[in-house]
Length: 71
Image: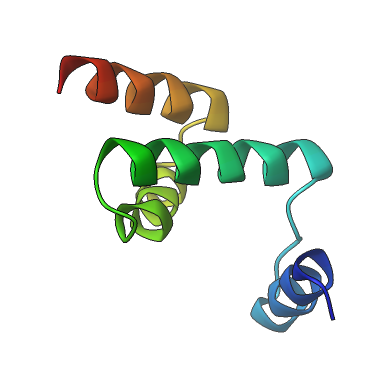
């Protein structure tokens, strides 16, 4: 089972939809920004915080980049 298949199965088990291909890409970019700007463990937590905020992934990425450039 590859990552996208696992995520699809997990989303189904949680009763939600899996991310679209574009959302998947944006989540990986956000995770990469967090990991490279801080520590690797920041990647999954940054994605969780972005989801919890309810903000658009593009806006979440903009804010992550702003924090990275200010730090």
